[in-house]
Image (cartoon, rainbow over all chains, first blue to last red; front, side, top):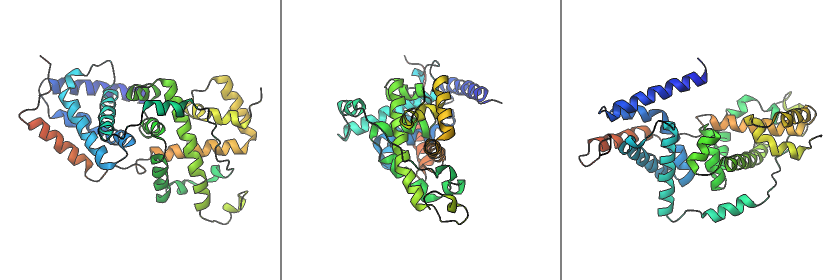
Length: 216
Length: 88
C-alpha cells in the first residue's frame, strides 16, 4: 500500500469517527486524537518553550476541539484543523504571560538580508550511523532547536519534527508559504552550523576510520 | 552557468525537499560531484533532519498521554460541558 492510499484510508476512517462522535458516540474522540498527541505537545512546546505550559496547551486544545468538533469541515484535514487550534492556544498563553514577540520584530529579522554560511566540514558524510545513536547528540540537537529564534523554531517544528507539508505549516501558523520556506531554510542552516562542530569535536577517535579524516 | 558554493547553500533546503527547479537541481548535482564541502554540508543537514524526526530526540513528558485523556474524560463527563453535536 502506498503512502497516499494509506493517507486517504486514514482520512476516511477519521471522517467516519467524526460522524459517529457527532452522532453521540463521544468516547470515540479519545481514539480520534490518539495519533496526534505528539504533534499537539511539540507544536505547543515550540511556541511556549516550557513543558508545563505546553502540556496545558495540548490539553486545552483537545478539550476545545472536542467542544467544537461540529465546526470541523471536511474540506481541511483533521490534523490541520487540530494543529491550528493548538497554535492558537499556545499563542494565547504567550500573550497572557506578556511574553509574545511583536510581529514587527519578526519582520525585522525576516527583512534583513542575512547570509548563512554553513559549517564547512568535509568529514560529515563519514559520520557513522552509530554516532547519530548517541544520546548526547540528541540532547545537543534539542538545545540547538530550543535556541533557534522563535519564528524559525516554530516552522522547523512543524515541518521537520512533525513532517507537515509547506501548505499545512503555512495555514497553521498563519503565514504565507514563501515565509515557511525561507524560515525553514534558515532554521536548518543555523542547526547545521551549530551541530556540525559539536559532532566533530565529540566524534570518538577510531583508528582506521578517523585516520582518513582530513583534520586528523 | 557554473554555481558556486554560496549558490548551492542557498538552495540546500529546497534541494532536500525536492522542490528546486529541474535546471537548478542539475547544476547543484554537477557542483556536488566535485565539491566535498557542499556534499558534506548537504549530508550533515540531512543527518540533522533524520535525527530530528527520530522520536527519541523529542520525547513527550512521562504520563502526558494519560493526563491528556483523563482531562478529556473529565470534560466529557462534566455537566456543564457542551456535548459535541450540531449547533443550534
